[in-house]
Image (cartoon, rainbow, N blue to C red; front, side, top):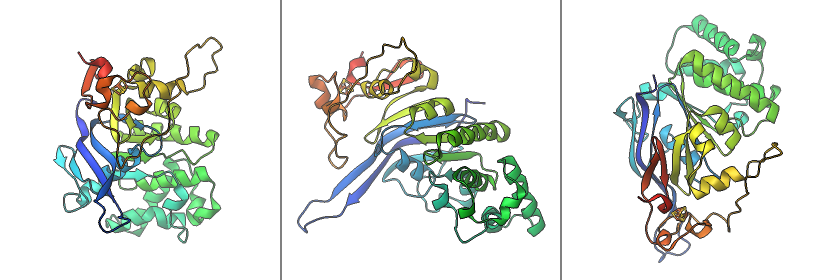
Length: 324
Ligand code: SF4
């Protein structure tokens, strides 16, 4: 089941132009995503993790066709879909849906929930009124909501109920692939667990494939089969979730993991404190982008960009420490 990639991303770039302060200034760009490649297999969850501003949400928007990449390619079921133009056909759009962080912002406040859920079916001319309503109620039951909620407005619901509606709406057209962009970050911890469990249940019931984007390492661990760690627009480490949580290789990944609090009394893992703030993505550091903050930096690190090295089967790291 997991041997065939549903989605492939090949050397994807997104550079946003920075407005000029003065007419004679050179054009400058924020390099939000800079040469990212990965693949997501059918039925799996690929987790993208990294600190705020690392480019993970931009990745989600490009894959979901909401913004166009500056360079690189995206394939869905082996067909190229790069860009939001004619390549991003209605068929792909209905097969790929996004659940955003803030459910309140992603629901129309002036429309009742029943209307919001029915809308995708109306746009795609699916069934008659009766059939569409039946599907709305079925989907509400699937996400654990009572039918009566169809007559309410978004402001009458709790955060958890609104996120269930956002998930139900994403599923109305029976997509294969869901992008979750921080889908539980705006919720209370107890509600987070309910939504994560719901997403897992729906995945196995409907054979969904997920790209799950989060800054929270515990959430990524719980949800993902494989993980990509992003730093300043690049994936610096990629592996199966258990491998990377058991043994991280990249110094940035190690520092992220060292910051997870542990309740085990005998845990003696040392906290790695990074120097300074993340650099400006308009002019990222030369060589390895992490070198100004890396406790293991060597001379070569500021000069040459590290290659992607397979340190164990399926475990890739971009770091000069592992050059063979
Ligand atoms: Fe640190 Fe050098 Fe590895 Fe970059 S390449 S993470 S600076 S050791």
